[in-house]
Image 1 (cartoon, protein in one colour):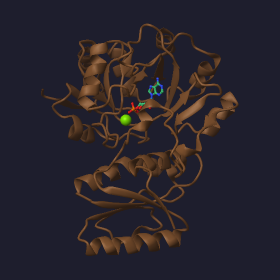
Image 2 (cartoon, protein in one colour):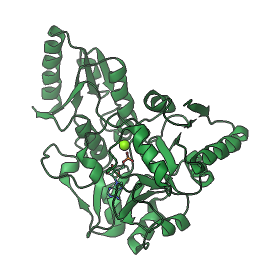
Image 3 (tube, helix red, strand yellow):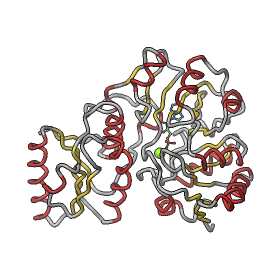
Image 4 (cartoon, protein in one colour):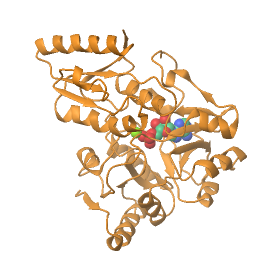
Length: 349
Ligand code: AMP
Ligand code: MG
């Protein structure tokens, strides 16, 4: 199949293009589209055949549920058994935006979309193109991140094409994703509500609205070994092709340790990459040194992380060392993705 890539910039062409994209989805096809978090791979959430196609195109195990993207609150009421007060409050505060809520599903949603579960994950994105596309597609778009399973989520259209060219009907190119990390996921069927994936809507922000919210430390701290909470968590996500290790400790100890490792790898003729910050970048003699920005700017790290992981793959990097991110809020989301990419390998120095 030929994948049509269409850059969306002019108001004029936009409407017709989005209508075309919507028609593809209504007819059971797949369209990748920009959102403020990462690019999504969209299909009709109410059509079991579309969801099966999404799993196939991604090479994703079919017990890993999809997030249903909606554009208004009426759509939420249609796909869940009931809209609890907690969901109304969170929607009021954070939708449209980077928050996904897990609720009990209604009969309208096929099990193919929810990976066999009785619950459904729902999000209303804030990106204008995403909202227009969801409306044009009938109002219910199942969309995981638009990468091949195991690759970093795509933050720009060319990355979607790298992974899915020839496998889907269309890619809407809306430029770079503004946030760069996937949505926060909160499970509202749990008592108290539980964060399953940290993101830009932080635990603190959710607690201000809901009171108690469970937030498992193992989501963003090195110590793992616990059973995964969300179905998708058992899979190694976001993995670069090279071996990635996170090095944690005082800045000087970290730069020293990584420096020695780089020298050793150089002797072994291994191509190396480093994920550093502006403050430390020039201390590293790596083949592909990369900074995620200022140490204090977690949003910049979130925005750049997946691009950097893909650049390592493109350059054929074999050994990657990353500084760790131990702050609160968005730092925790960055650390969560880094831990997944590293398969939870952390060295404390
Ligand atoms: P992605 O679409 O790639 O951002 O991944 C979506 C993730 O949302 C899945 O891997 C699951 O971890 C989570 N998820 C989706 N639906 C549910 C659900 N019904 N219950 C729990 N977690 C879910
Ligand atoms: Mg994903």
